[in-house]
Length: 298
Image (tube, rainbow, N blue to C red; front, side):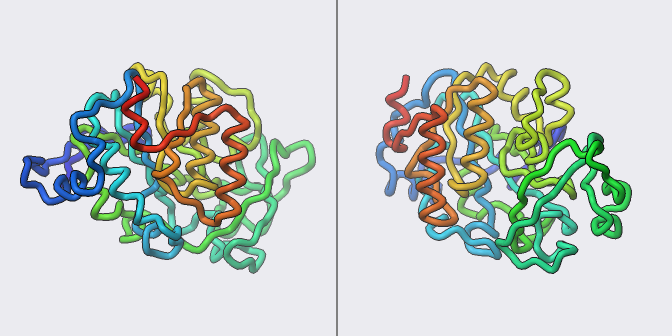
């Protein structure tokens, strides 16, 4: 039902081939549950970013409680007329991804943390990593070689490339509007990527990158995509609030976009994590709205 027109820099422009006439069942579901969307338009110069509505996060190996309940709201937002761009992100991990506890050389279990260091070339430091990551690991990092160190949380195996868990939930696919863009993230083996603009290595290092340097270091071309579309404001939704939604919002803000979190179109991994994320985002300057308020921001 979906054809790929363009595939460059981790961005796929999709043409949805499902005819969306008045009898379409997914649209009828949207109308029944989200009446506020009919006859309304999206705010000007704005994009909708829908984060990681994938099977593994909906009812798979890393299920976010209540994640399925926001699907009708997200589909309603996606079908507002007037968005400059509607973007769906997805985790797209290789099976050797460093964030998987199963790949840790330190016998860690899911949800534990490890400190990871990277050298000036972006290689992960440590002899322990050489067997799996070979030339992408530096077994002999000295203190002078280390560019950045941060704490990496380890996860159950999830969203592995070309598996059921990596695919979008069928209800999300049914609600995807024509001309939507898909941005894949987390496809580097040695660096996780919570944010849709920059992977954790770039974002958490605090590197002062811009222009071509930032484009080269980043995993996707999302920033350029938004720039070309003339977007000034991004509305962020999806999973999970305390991780990828939070990081994407903070990165969008750092890159100069007015950033709005749609509170009733996201869910956290944990309630406490969600509350902390809201505090961090509010302090950073992210605006909060309910989905039904979005068309009013014109």
